[in-house]
Length: 98
Image 1 (cartoon, rainbow, N blue to C red):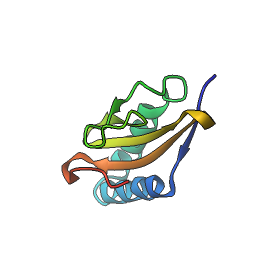
Image 2: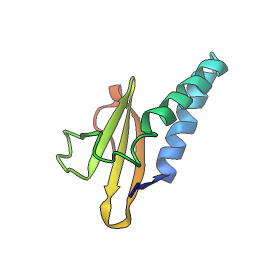
Image 3: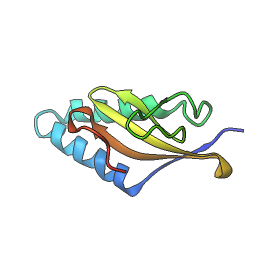
């Protein structure tokens, strides 16, 4: 059975901030980049363990998909068949704050 995919409020703010930052110079590029983030996570409901374990946390339930230059960090909640996108974090910012 496939998992459900949800976005945390913090991840939604992250997306809006990323979009706004890129759109200052190129709104078309901003839309394209945000679409690429959605594309990067679309397989997660069927393959929840496909992302790598976030090395800084070493918790198999906290994983990430890389969409350069961002890390899309998610939590697996197998008991609820849920994947929650926790953060969309610029890789240059270091360890994601969850």
